[in-house]
Amino acid sequence: TFLQNRGYAFAQIHTEAVVDSTLNVANIRMRVDPGPRARVDTIIIEGNTSIDEKIVRRELPFREGDYFSRSDVSRGQRELFGLKLFRLALADLPSQPVDSTVTVRYRVRESRPRFVSVQTGYSRAEGLSFEANARHRNFLGGARQLSLSAFTRTGIAAQPESGRNPVESVNASISIRQPYLFTTRLSATVSPFYNRLDDPNQNIRFYEIGVTTSFLLEMLPFRHVSFQHTLSRAVPLTTTGLTGRFDIYDRSVVGLGVTAGKLNDYLNPRRGFLIRPQIEGGGLLIPSGVTFIKGVIEALGYIPLTRRTNVVVSIFYGRLKPLGNSRQQSDTETEFRFDPIRFYSGGAVDVRGWGLNAMGPQVARADSILFDESGKAAATNAHFEAVGGLAKLRGSVEVRVPIPGMDDKWRLGAFIDFGALSSSVRRDESGRILFDENGEPSVRDTGTFRNAAFQFGSGLGLRYSTPVGSVRLDFAVKINPMDEDLLNPEDIVLYRKGLRSGAPDRKSGRRFNFHLSIDRAF
Image (cartoon, rainbow, N blue to C red):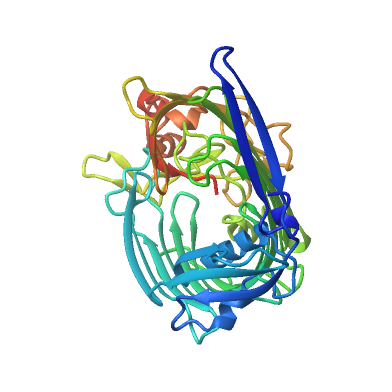
C-alpha cells in the first residue's frame, strides 16, 4: 500500500515459505517487487448512460498525467457513491502491460433518477409520526439533487409521562443540493422551509417560514465541517389559532459545526470516538428578533473491554449567552422567543430516567379550573412546563455485554446517566415557589451550575444490531427525583390555589420510565 500510494501501481509482494515439520519451524522470505513508477495515462468510464462522463470525471481526485495513487482511486469510488446517482461503482486496473503508464477503470451502474419514500414511526412520548420524501437525483443535470420532504408528529396514541402532553409538529421543505463547488469535498444546499410546533409542555406554539443555506466540507467519513445560515420569520401563537399572538419577529442564525473521529463501524460501533463541537449565533450578520451566542460540545467514546464487551461513554456541555435586548430573559416576549433555544434534558437519548425534556426545573400549569355540580374542582390540560436553562451538562456510562444463548447481534446494557441545567425555580424557606409581579414563577439562571441540582438515572436495556443502527429498549429509574417528578400536575395546581385539602401525594410509579429508540452514533 505504501508503494502503491506513491506511484508504483504494479507493486507486488512475493512470499516463499519453507517448513521444517520435524522442528516445527518455518522460514519465510518476502520479496518486494515495486515495478516501475507509473503515471495515469487513461481513465476509462463504463456503464454511465444518462449521466455525462464529465460529471463522473469531476468527482475523481486525480487526472491523466498524475502519478498513480491507490488511495486516490478508492477515494474516487467513495465520491461517486456520495453523489447518490449510482447503485454500483467499482474501480480496478484492467489487464495491461507493466510499464511507466497505467490505465484506471471505473464501472458504474446508475440508480433510477427519481426516488419516493413514505415512512411511519411511533414513540410513547409523541405518538404516531409520518414522513414522506421525493427526490430527483440529477435535477437539471450536473448531479444536483432536488428533494421535497414533509414530516409530522401527530400525537395520536401517545402515552407520555403522567402530567405531560404529546408534542405536535409539521415540517416541510424543498431543497436543492449542488454537490461540487470548486472541489469534490465541498457541497452547498439551499432549502426553503415551513415549520409548525405545538408543545403545550413548554408553552411553545408558533409557525415559521424561512430559508436555510448550508455548506458542507467533507474530508473523510465522520470528519467534516459545516456552515449554515437560517433566515426566517416566526409567528408565535399562544393558542392553536391566530388569536392572542405575540409579535411577529425575524430570526437570523448562523452556525458552524465540526465532526471529528474514527469508528470501526458507522451504524453499530464498538471501538472509536466522535467529537462534535458546534457554535451558532443569532443576529450576528442580519438584525434579528433573537440575539445570542450558543456553543455545544459533545463527545462519544466506544471502548472495547473484550471481544464482545464494550463501554460507551458520552459527555455533553452546552452554554447559551443572550446578547443585547435578549438579555432581559424575564420579559414575557423574550422568554417566549427563547423557549425553543434554551437547553432541556431528559429522554430516550438523554437522561433516561425522565421523559422527553422532563428533567430539571418544571412548573405545573393548567388552562383553567372547572367545578362540577358538587363543587369539586378539576384542572383542564394540567401539565408540567419545562423551565430550561442557559447551560446544560449531561453524561452517561453504559456497559454492553453479550446475552448467554443469544447470537452476536444481541447485547444487554447497564447504564447510569446524569444531567443538570443551570436554572432553578426560586422557593421560600418552606419550599413554596416564589412568583414575580406578572404571576410567573421566579427563576434563577446565571448560566453556571452553582445552584443546579445534578440528577441521576440508572437502568438496564436490550440492544439489537440492525442495518439502520442499534435498536434499544431501556428500563430506567430516577435515582434522586425532585418533588415535581413524583407529583401529579393537577394536584399541584389545585393545592396552590387552595382547592385541595392536604399536600399532593407522591406517585411511586412516576419514578420509572421505558424508552424504545434507535441508537446511531451520527
